[in-house]
Length: 156
Image 1 (cartoon, helix red, strand yellow):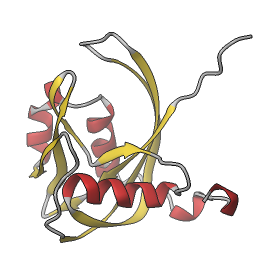
Image 2 (image 1 turned 90 degrees about the vertical axis):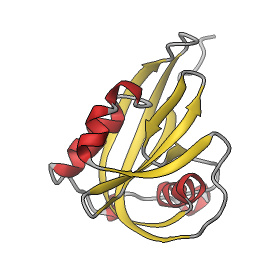
Image 3 (image 1 turned 180 degrees about the vertical axis):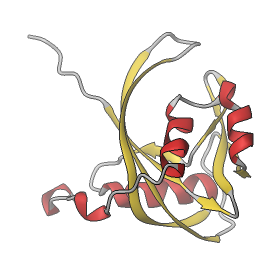
C-alpha cells in the first residue's frame, strides 16, 4: 500500500495601506523570517475564515478579505532540516481594520508595515519564495472574486 500524498493547505493576507504592506517577522527553525500573515487551514473553517483568523492571530489586526489574489503550489525544502513540504497557498487581499492590541501568536516577533523596497531588500529572509510572488501578483492587479470559493456546509 502506498502512502497518500497531501499538500499543506495555507492562507495568506496581502494587505496594503499607504503604499506599505502588513508583514510579520517570525521565529522559525531556520531563523527569523519575513512572511505575510499566513497559516494553515484548520478543520471546520472556510478559507476566508482561516485568513481572517490567521491575520488576527499574527498581527492583531482585524481583516476583511475582498478578493483572491491567487492560488500557489510550491514545494519548499527547509535549510535546517532538509524536510520537503508541498504547500497549496490561497492568497487574499482585503482591508485591515483596527489593531486590537491582542498578544501575537507564539513565534511571531512583530507585525510590521513594509514598503515594496523593504520587501525586496529582505528577500534573503523571506519564509518562502511565495512571499514576493504574492506581492508582485497583487501589484499586477490579479484579483478573483470570493464567489469563486465554495465551502460545502458539511465542511464547517
